[in-house]
Image (tube, rainbow, N blue to C red):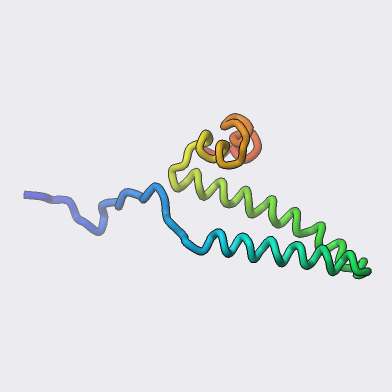
Amino acid sequence: MNTVKKPLTPVPRQRRRDVVENDQFASFARRIIRAHGRRVATGDVEALRDLIALSSVIDDAIGEAVIGLRAFGYSWAEIGSRLGISRQAAQQRWGGDKP
C-alpha cells in the first residue's frame, strides 16, 4: 500500500522550460534601448541620466536571471558557457554567498 500523499510530495523540477518568445522579446528590448539612445543623441540631454540608469537595471536583471537559472538547476559551467566566460568567472561575479 502506498502511503505517500501526492499533494505533499514535491514534484521534480523540469530542467528547462521552453519559451518561444524569448528571442522576439529580447529583440524588442534591444530596439527600445537603441531608440532611447537615438533620442538622447538628437539633443535630449535630460534623458542621458535615464539611459545610464538602464545599465544598472540591466545588470540587476542579469543577476536575477542567473540566480533563477541556478535555482532551476543550471550549473555555473552551463551559465558561463552561454556567456562566453568560465564557470569560475560566472560564480565569482554572481555567486557571492549564494548557493
